[in-house]
Amino acid sequence: RNVALSTDAAARAVDLAEAAERFRADAVRLANSSETDLGEWTSWRKQATKLENEIVAEEGRADSDELMGKALEEKAREEQAEAGSNRAKAMSDESLYISDMANATEEARKAAQDEEAAAAASERTIC
Image 1 (spheres, helix red, strand yellow):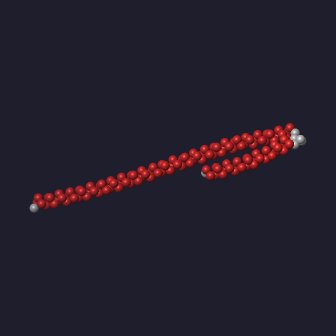
Image 2 (image 1 turned 180 degrees about the vertical axis):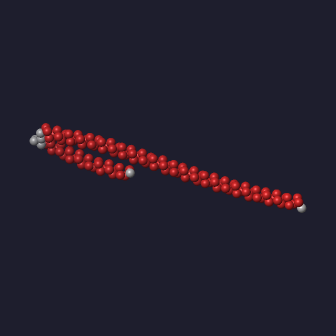
Image 3 (image 1 turned 90 degrees about the horizontal axis):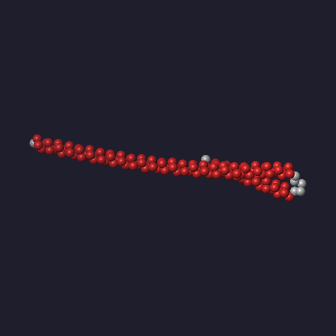
């Protein structure tokens, strides 16, 4: 999404730069022409003002796109950090489970030994 935003913003910036260049050329032509009348100059000025407003709006969109891109990157970093934390917790939980199983196995082994020892003692007492 961020790449698409950057590509769109770059294309709009190129279009506006080309339009600005055409208007600059028109300004030079109008300024150097002795036949330029006030109506033509006023029309050009209105178009130039419109272009300037579009450039300002485009700069605002580019800034907005950049901020959105940064927000998306930050969200992705947060999600990666959360995923890493979840993996670490899962590994810790697995380690605790393995430890608990080992302890339970050891306790069962000791209980079996105690049972065998008690049975052997009982046999010796009976004999």
